Length: 235
Image (cartoon, rainbow, N blue to C red; front, side, top):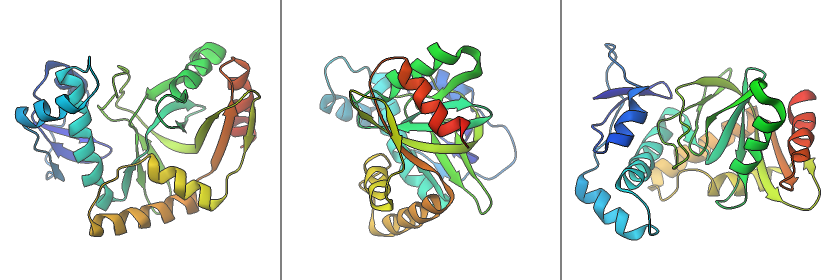
């Protein structure tokens, strides 16, 4: 079965009904050659499942494993995963990235509560960026991280926002060193030397073309208003 994910023709046969359902929206029946062929067996899923937390389903393990292979394979195509919740506002995508448990998804849901139909979440865990000479596009993927939100959409990237928990709401611009450190932990890792070199090129291109922010926030709805004023409305 072939799919068009982040503009890349990808071949894979889903094992679980759930992943098959998510990937159906990305189905491709055109005549382009396949860019990426993914292989992940039932045995691979079962092995991974034993390493994951109790309660993880077969479908979640498959999605996690396949997304890892996909996100390493796309690096040479000037594409990269950013572990984040991608919200669309004003025809641009804003990626809110943080370590698991910090509250990136909680924060983007505050945007839904605050701004209603003006915004929506494109992907709540694993959007992909495509880096071109004149633009950067944020792309939905069928890999949802268990959230159930994985839309087949593509928007120009507005900014990448690193979320930190705090008592007060504030927004600042990080240093280049901070950006590199934070990006490294929120993208595909455990790659070979050649792929790592390509990933560093992607980092350099992305940093040169993208606005980055650090959002320190609490879990009150006021955090969404603070973030929108500083990140969206002023740009």
